Figure 1 (cartoon, one colour):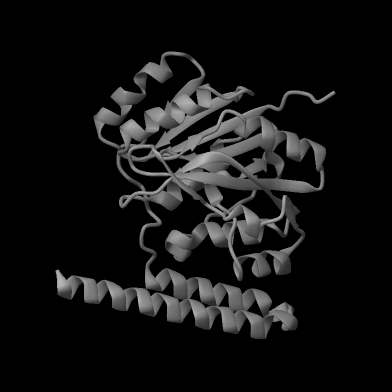
Figure 2: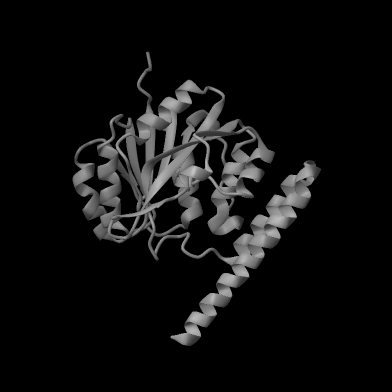
Length: 276
């Protein structure tokens, strides 16, 4: 008989009170209730706390604020350090996403049935800024297997050379993330490095089910990645594959394609700006 999982949820919050309220409502609507929900707010204005207040009064949701914005990396580090709260699993959620009702149940059941895995991610429905589903999926289902397991660093590098694992979809075993260090030098791409490094501790999985709603809007952190962050990531990848010679040529080909793609996108933005 499957036992109920003990899950801590952390919601990373900054100045998106209306979205935060939707995120919290989706957490309180889970078929498997989380053991604890903590909002780690990163110096938002007072209106955000006001919008969260009705949820705080219910007792399950806790607020941990900051007097000023300390940066996304500081808040993410705080999530890994404070989030588990003695529970078996940890989920870190962005304040602009929403969970489908079966998210926590499905993800935790997978980890309970696969003891060798320390984390699992999933697919998602895309929603617009108003919360309407766009008809798109975060990952095209037909391009992914029902279950994918990444055993080690080389497997994660190969994954990122063809697609990615969505950071806000990942449920962790708390024991596996106790020593995580968030590295701010990788900027907006820090999650790629974090998940790749996590694979040193155990296997990471992906299940091809849409279990949350990923909001796509112009104010999200990933709307435009900085070129310097890409360069830092390239250097990281090159350092990682030094011990795996068979990956060096495929990696260089991949990095060249990505540089060309970024250059083309920058060119199109310039042309669009001139036309306007």
